[in-house]
Length: 187
Image 1 (tube, rainbow, N blue to C red):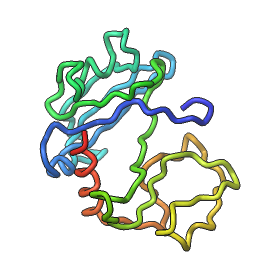
Image 2 (image 1 turned 30 degrees about the vertical axis):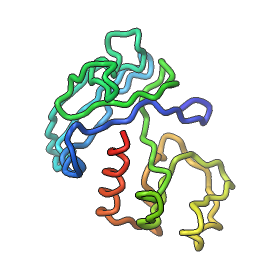
Image 3 (image 1 turned 135 degrees about the vertical axis):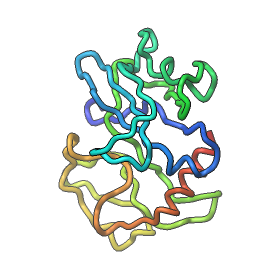
């Protein structure tokens, strides 16, 4: 993020087919070095805990700069075949205009709760942007009772993009699995 603007860097795709992968893996980014722009990507077992970590793969000293040996696409591999797959579990889709000196600092949520064109599976708030104080927060008519909410202003270091953790928004885990599978099949 630069000046409040979030840049897409890459998306992670499971190599495994079907929805089983949605409960097999989780991705962790750690050891972010702000000076060098390097970071580690950890592929963990979905059912591990932070107190009992089960690392399946680790890619150390990754970077977003394609001119460096630690370029994340070179280390992990890409879905388009530009870089050979080196991971047993995941591949990447690299954003075309990703800044070369950036590093991952969150994730972008889905922008639609629509599956298969016209079937709406529910009303889930996906936070895809940061809000300034006083900004009106909308998600559309499905949450009409909440369209009058205004933001107190997001604190960038304490606010994550993705599914809302606000108590007045609920979601069904089966819905989330279906949504993730639908989006992954489009890759």
